[in-house]
Length: 234
Ligand code: ADE
Image (cartoon, rainbow, N blue to C red; front, top):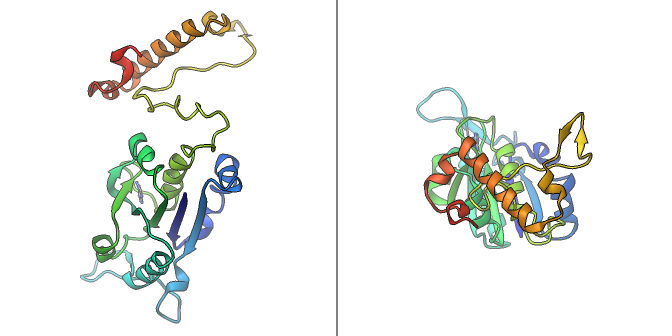
């Protein structure tokens, strides 16, 4: 998979992709993440990429010309499955969207800034708008990092334990069950006996019960649509 990200603040994306799982995924050649600075695509000598909004009002708008120059240069090199604009107006990111996008080959992500991008970019280029929640960030960069992380960790071979992404919260419509590690007794706070039993079937049942109970308690909305495996008793 390849992910291209267009931004006015490329440095903001240095760190998220330079550590741990996201770095390893790139080192192993499982994903290529390329961050593009919008500024060199400016059409003026000051290399500015924003301008005042027509009709007045506070805040600057990312101009259409540099964005289109950048997008079209990238499109000349490969075709993209989705052109995503990070925006609080978009559909809210969830595990289903991450799963779906993890099956794509080439993704292009545009990060908004200031008051956003010229509406014509959204109308004529963007195929999908994604929000990471009902709050407003200073720009789309951190949201793009969140989206990319949620996708990249699902790519085959990225996680050491292949089953690990499958047992994530949300993958089966449930929150994840509690986990414990050594010591088995810390200040008298004991790890549940069943986990020490070595009995795989009982451990699986216990984990499922815990996942259902936790979901009922914290996110009953997830059980509402009847599609989770909780009701099926899997
Ligand atoms: N840009 C600003 N706020 C955002 C949000 N909540 N999600 C995605 N992109 C954004």
